[in-house]
Length: 324
Ligand SMILES: NC(=O)c1ccc[n+]([C@@H]2O[C@H](COP(=O)([O-])OP(=O)(O)OC[C@H]3O[C@@H](n4cnc5c(N)ncnc54)[C@H](OP(=O)(O)O)[C@@H]3O)[C@@H](O)[C@H]2O)c1
Image (tube, helix red, strand yellow):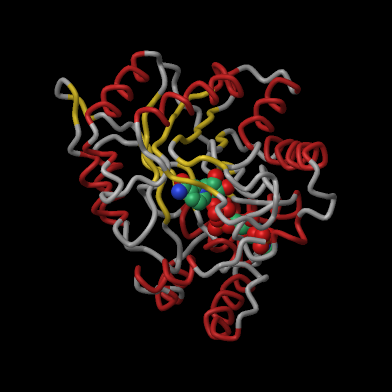
């Protein structure tokens, strides 16, 4: 297998590949328009900036509209050889919004062998040999995917073709699901090579399981570092005012932005290999990457601890964010 080239900050294309997403100010980010051509050009500008700033890990999924296709056209257009970058994608959710901002269903989750085989072919068509990690998109105990022999056997075959196998997690049971996934082995070897999970200053419940995963040799990728925009200057919600004040004070003390501070908090976890920026604009990617220059210290660590929400509360608020 090709060695993984991991930059501490990666770029996720969830907000760049489709007109509608749940992040707070998606509408303003896409001022150039929602046509496929305009969005592809916009995503390429953000990718160019990220590349220039040293980002080498890129995250997409079948369900992020045209994100795989946009990434593929950018990689080929810039003539980047596969050994200069690492690409992770996901199967299991199908994009269903029909290039509309509002839709009855944006993504449909089906974790069966049929979906895996179909998505695998579609990903092959868009990303070809650029694909390094193929992840189950939002694996949960309820979906039964971790117990599905047919799916697991197909994932083993994928590894045989040189593609690493991962899973992504969501919801208050992230930690438990990860520990269950780590038990799955084939011929004495752990099946999953990587995990992508949510950890941020508000939601820290998966930390112990992520520590175990890293110790066991898995690659740990962190998403939603700025809590879908809640840990940025854009969050003007009155209920967040006290927490916002704490964040702003620490950001000012360290001479940085709130979003960079939130990302630096993740960079500082010893078990985190890559933190995803979900930047939707060139300005956001520039601001997010400032995290690399922050000297995270004990004062930041202690002062920001009270930001923590219970897992249940965090995921309830997230589920209430509007697609826009
Ligand atoms: N289950 C899964 O596997 C899963 C789930 C979610 C995400 N992901 C991956 O993780 C990546 C990141 O996750 P995410 O985008 O959901 O969450 P996130 O990184 O916490 O939030 C990113 C959003 O925060 C806002 N933001 C960032 N920097 C900002 C700044 N400087 N000023 C103002 N707003 C700023 C932007 O939203 P607005 O401008 O729209 O407000 C941006 O789209 C995704 O792209 C995707 O690749 C995976």
